[in-house]
Length: 130
Image 1: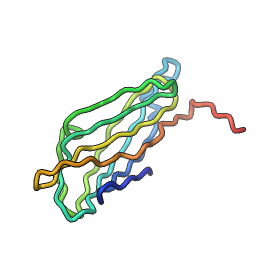
Image 2 (image 1 turned 120 degrees about the horizontal axis):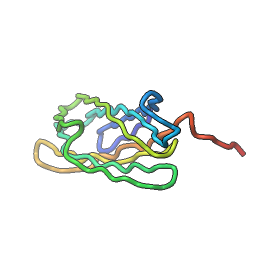
Image 3 (image 1 turned 90 degrees about the vertical axis):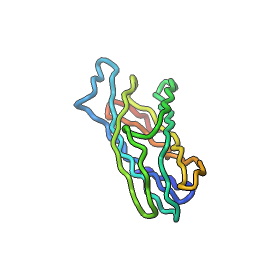
């Protein structure tokens, strides 16, 4: 599990390689990731937008921007949590993801919450230990 806290909002991510949705012989590797957002602040907040950077082992970067997550813009009162699952393909057997959420307080103040950087590793990646 990878975690990051920004302004008392904790974002935890758990990636998982999905062998049954991957085709290594065709350079298609797929990961699911589960995200848990916990509002540990005294304010009610709403997730308004997302930004992801997905980087494969060759350095190829894809940026994804949009409103909300999985078709929702959840409102989190103090102490509440929101969990969702999504996924991403890569053309290489490893990579990484990072990003941020744009949040808004009930008073209309916008602020950014960082998503922790996390690896996308598959069993098809050969590693050398020196």
